Image 1 (spheres, rainbow over the protein chains, first blue to last red):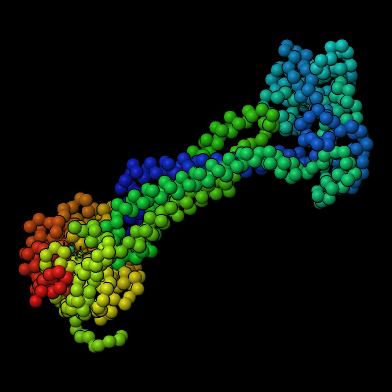
Image 2: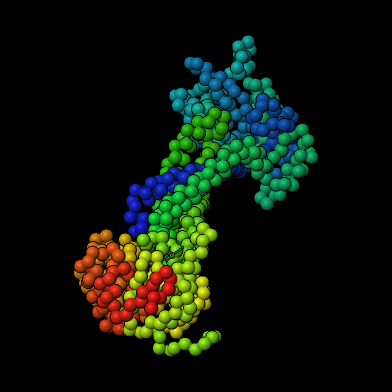
Length: 394
Length: 230
Ligand SMILES: Nc1ncnc2c1ncn2[C@@H]1O[C@H](COP(=O)(O)OP(=O)(O)OP(=O)(O)O)[C@@H](O)[C@H]1O
Ligand SMILES: [Mg+2]
C-alpha cells in the first residue's frame, strides 16, 4: 500500500527524532509491563503457593495468621477427630513449628516443623524417605537444602535443642538421623528448615497435643464456603479460612504494591500519550503546507488520518517490542533483588510472566500511541485548506 | 438544479462570485462579484498585482474553497453547494492542481508521487503504475522516475507535480504561480510544457506574476482589488 510506504518512510526521514521517541515510549512500556506483572504476580503466586499441596483450608489459633505468633491450637487430637468426622473433610494435617538450635559450630537456628508424615503439605521430598523411615532405634528427620549445605547428608546424625534449655538438656533436645532432603514450600531465602514427626517435636518443646496450624483437605466437590461456616460454628476458638480468603487478606496487606503498580502504570501510559502526541504534533505541524496541498488535490481526511495513525502505530509497535524485552529484563533483575525480602516464602514471585499481561502492556502502549496521534491529526484536518495554502505559499 | 439556465458548453462558469475573509474584525473582500467562463481547451492566465485575489479566485474555481456569495459550475456541476467530502472527491476526479512550492512528498519517488491521487481514487496498482510512467515520460522525466524530489531540480519537481495533477485525467488544470520558484530558463520550459499539454486538449488556468508565462497563454484576465479589469 502506498500510504503504508509513505508512513514508514516518513518515520525514517527523521531517524534520530523517531528513534528517541521510540526509546522513550519503550521505557514507559517496560515500566507498564513491570507494573502489570507486579500487580498480579504477587496474588497469583501466593495463591498457587497456598494451593500447591492440595489443602484448601487453613486453621490457626484465634486472631492469628499461620506462624504469625507463637500461639498454638491445644487439644489437637479432639479437634482433628472432630473435623475428620465431617464427611466433606478428607484429611487434616497438623503442623507444629518451633525454632531449635543445631549443635554445631555457631549453633545455627533451624525452623523445625512437626508434621504427620502421612498427611502433610509443607514440604516435597526430593531425596530419601519420610521421618518414619529411620533405622530402628533412630529418630528420622527431613532436612532442606540449606542444612544439606552445612554438610549434613542422609545417614548422618544431628542434635537439635530448644533455645535456653541448658538445665534439662536431655529432655529438651533430640538426636536425629537424616533420612531425606526436601523442598520446604513456605521457607524464605536463607532460612534453615527441617521436619520431624509432630510427636517428636512436641516432646522436645513440651507442646504435647498442640499445633501451630492445621491444613484441611476437602473431599472432591465439597462446598468450601459451607465447610468454613460449619467449622467456624463448631470451633469458635479457632481462626478458619479458605485459601481464597487468605489470598484476599494477603492482597490487602500487599495493597501498597498494587496501588504503586496502578499509579506507575498509569503514569507510563500518560508518558506514552504525551511522547507520541508531541512527536506526532511536531511532525504534522512540519507538514501543514503539504497536508493542505494533499487535501486540495483531493486526498480525503480519512486517508490522511489513516496515514498519521499508521505512523504512530509503527512508532508504538517498535517501542512496544523494545519495551517488552526491556521490561522482562528489568523484572528479572528486580525479582532477584526482591526474592531476598525477609520473612516472605522464597517461592513467592513478585513478577509473574503471564501472556495476558504482556499482551495488555503492548495493547495499552499501542492504543495510547495511536490515540495520541489522532489529536494533532484531526486538528490538521480541520484547518481550512485555502487559508493554510495562503499562509504557506508566499 | 434550480435557477436560471447556464450555457452547456462552458467548462467553468462563475456567477457573481464573492469571497470575503474576516481577519481580526476587518472584512477583506479578496474576490468581489466576479463572473467568468472558461471553455474547454482554454489556456487562461490570471494576472494582477499581489493581493489582487488571483490565488483566491483559482481556489474557488478549483472547488478548493467555497465563495461567500455566488455560484460556480465546474464540468456542469454546482460545486458551491457540495459538502466537504463531496468536494474533495470532486477535486480528485475533475481538477488538477499545481502549487508554487510543488508540495510533493519527499519520501516518495517521482512515480509514487504521481501514483498517489490514483491510489486515492482506487485505481489498481498496475494501472496507476503504467499511467504514472506514461505521464512522467510525457513531461520529459523518463529517466527520473525512481528519484525522490530531493534528488531532482526545481524545474523537474514542478514537472512531477504537473504529472501528478494530470493523473486522474482532470477536466481542468489549475496552477498557482507554477514558475514562482523557478529561474527564467526553467520557467520558459514550463510554459512550453503547458502549451504542449494545452495543444493536446488540456484546459488550463494559471495565476501568475510571470509576464512570459502570461504572454504565452491564449487568454489573459487581469484582477485588480478582487475585480476583473476590463
Ligand atoms: N485565508 C485568508 N485569510 C485572510 N485573508 C486572506 C486569505 N487569503 C487571502 N487573503 C487576502 O485576500 C487578498 C487576496 O489574496 P490572494 O492570495 O488571493 O492574492 P494574490 O493575487 O494571489 O496575491 P499574490 O500575487 O501575492 O499571490 C489579500 O488581501 C489577502 O491578504
Ligand atoms: Mg497568490
